Image (cartoon, rainbow over all chains, first blue to last red; front, side, top):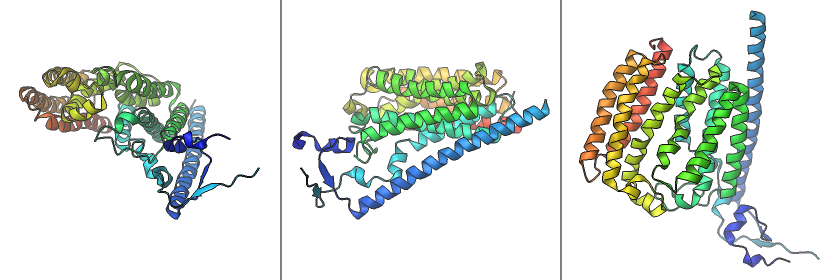
Length: 68
Length: 306
């Protein structure tokens, strides 16, 4: 088993497994929840952006084809 | 063999565990982002024919804004060590421990890819390529190669900040002719006097961080002289844009009037050994660039240009 004491405390935030478990406080849980919601909204937002781009491009091409 | 987790409730929470979405948004430097949005929009409006499809134009602006945010996040990731040593930047999310550097890097890379992808779809491949060059230039050329090595860092690195109007122009026309590069040149020449005025004000900060800005690398007198030289080039060059078909009489008059004040501020700073005029020049330089771009916007919306 690795000697976890050799891992610097600040490495815990860099995704390196330290073997320690942390039970989040209510403030931490609330913050995590808000981060999760923000990530979900960002993903949905990007999908909407791509969808809108596709629709606008199709409209452009259709109107171009009708005009020619 | 079963291992019992070592749970800790009493230990003080690491700052990143209570990080909020706003801390991640701060990585994108929203104020710089808004400047990129504005200049890119002017680039679009100033292009011949203007904005033919507003929906695609808005999506292109969003993509450019995301690209600017991505490069800011990558810049903060790379410069986290020096940001922590400067009072101006010590409260940024990485130095305070709110956001781990690796997460800032991941956010920057993902946003870079998504912004270029979105712009390729909405504004075409040339605009997307220019946006990719902008991000790469800011992060690799400016942040990684120049910033800590030479006092010319912001002169060359300024190209990244000057590119958004060209990206905007390319997004609506699919091309980047000389007119688009005139908009680039305006910001490019404006950048040195603007940032060196800030450098004079924050000289100790840059000294502490070991960043060779002109004042701490070459001294205040040389900086004031270089500010004056670049100001003369800017003030003489800016009105010449009116000779092209992207600017008209209103722009010419505005650039001459504001240019005279810009030059006066630079000259006052040049003549004052205690750098007292640096704050005035820094503030006025922001107003100067904003006003010239705003006039271009007004001229094109009202048909006064060219």
